[in-house]
Each structure stands twice: as C-alpha cells, then as structure tokens.
Image 1 (cartoon, rainbow, N blue to C red):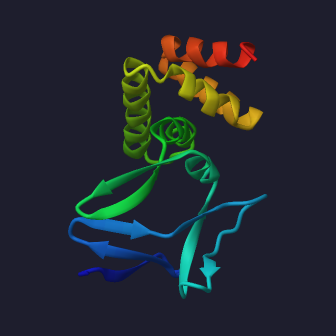
Image 2 (image 1 turned 45 degrees about the horizontal axis):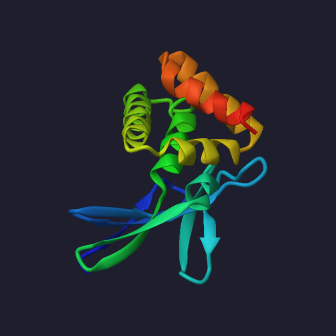
Image 3 (image 1 turned 135 degrees about the vertical axis):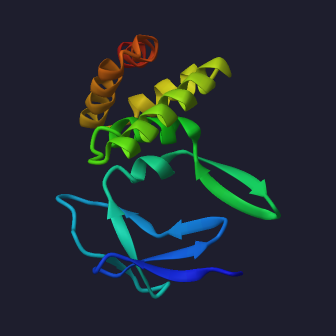
Length: 156
C-alpha cells in the first residue's frame, strides 16, 4: 500500500510512513513505565509505551473513510487526553498545538450538545488525571469548560 517501515530513535520503535499518513504503534504505559520498545510478537514489531493512552480507547467511535473502517477515540476522550498531555510536553510548539486542539474540540462538542458525554468521560477518569485537567484549564483560564467539568464531579 506504499508504506515504508521507519524507525524512530536507537531503541527500534517502528512506524509505517506514507506521504499521506504515518502509523505509529502505541501501547499504554503501565506502572512506572519503560524506556525501551514494547515488543508486539504477534505483529513482529516494536511499539512505544505512552502514559494516559488507555483513556483513548475507553470510548471510541467508528468511521468509514475512503473505503476503510477505522476506530478512533471519542472526541471527548481525545480532547481530555490532550489537556493532560500538553502540560507534559517539553516542546512549547507541540504543547500549544495539543492545548489548542483540546479546547477547540471541547468547545465544538459543547456547541453540539455533548456536555453530558464530556462529564461522563471526565468522571470516569482517575482522580489524579482529573486534577491535571482541572489545573490545565485553570492555567488556560477556560472557566466555562472548568465549571462544566466541576459540575460533573459534584453532580454524582
């Protein structure tokens, strides 16, 4: 299909590269994490272990594009994930991109009437993750979104 196998770093992380698409193989990081590739024997490849990744597959959507059916994280999960990640980024341009993407998606979801979904996803998260999101929203002065999430906590 025109993909070239690429390697990232000395550790042997594998990704498939195409002019229109890059596929990276990721697995959730557990406990204290690992700094070496996670071997996926079934596929014969190495994956990258990332913190907070399990949030992305807790709630998914399915779409069909160009004849392919793909599963994606629900936009609420994706946006809340980005609110955690932006605070961990070392590169300010990537942090800004994550932060802006998260806020744009959350505002679009709210405009579409998805407040309950956002609250449900937030409420299902670990308390530490919730606190990271709250701190990120405070830093961004996104009080409207912050109030909605906090009402999700107190509402039960």
